[in-house]
Image 1 (spheres, rainbow, N blue to C red):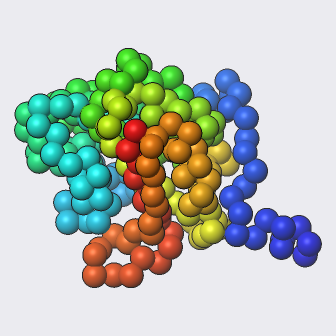
Image 2 (cartoon, helix red, strand yellow; image 1 turned 180 degrees about the horizontal axis):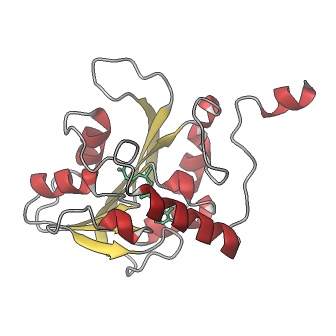
Length: 216
Ligand SMILES: C[S@@+](CC[C@H](N)C(=O)[O-])C[C@H]1O[C@@H](n2cnc3c(N)ncnc32)[C@H](O)[C@@H]1O
């Protein structure tokens, strides 16, 4: 009972990213691309998560944005449609996911833990439900901020550690407390905030998802 109380409402303790775990994660997502129900290739642009990303990035003009852990590129496709002059880089660990992404995107295989991009090279960066799989969260956040230009904007949507246990999760997945990511973001960015987000604007957020926004 004491143990139950101790861990209730917390995310599980971190696992180290050993080479075996890194291979397990990659293999799992390579295999998951066939599962269109849980890893869909499209998303309704009216969903608040999409609007949050678009609003955080702002108009990109002929600039560059990075979708880090893009999956099948469902967010990136919409970001590109709304910003037809911009370059949208869709990056994911799993090549099988990237094969679903639109050819209008610049598709790159890579890891959140070793972003294959130069410092200060994006006007906007976002990560939706991908940071929770990075295991070494501190390093992943540092990388996202590294590739962002000064003044650039960053959006992260992930699950709230206060709601840990509501869904089945793989052993490496981590959910975040609001302040945990805010503190990491503020190591690299001049401003950061966080709010709960629902799927639809006319529905009160149930607390499962949090949306962080930062300006470098
Ligand atoms: C739940 S899916 C979300 C995909 C997409 N962001 C979306 O919202 O549709 C998580 C994605 O993160 C990718 N991923 C997991 N770990 C990663 C890492 N270390 N670097 C890059 N991508 C990663 C997976 O391959 C998978 O496509």
